[in-house]
Length: 139
Image (cartoon, rainbow, N blue to C red):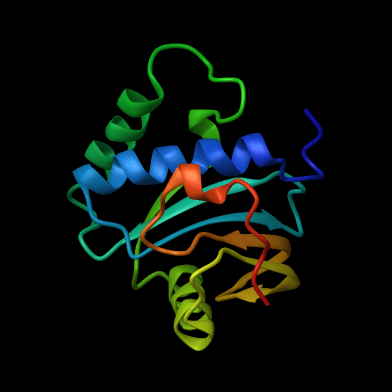
């Protein structure tokens, strides 16, 4: 799979994971980022309930949701969980509040906290995988 382009199947797989993960720990943000220095897409899940004491359980939940073995459109190593006080998550929350988007937001190049990225895809919350099909990107 070409890591240069975030494809619909990845977006839908990320939405399904975020929706399921949200039952374990409520999410304030879920987004894909392609950092400038890496070139690979990562799915970030940000929660106000995430902290140093439960990060291991959170990653365990990601592994449980994705099930045994590798899924075609989403790999456990592509997922990063974080607290909303993380500078990257804070930047995404600002975008969500600024645009009050009901549709996902796609950005081309920028900086979230100390992370420079080539592209970003921010899910509108609450996330619902079936509603992603056919929706246009935000601003």
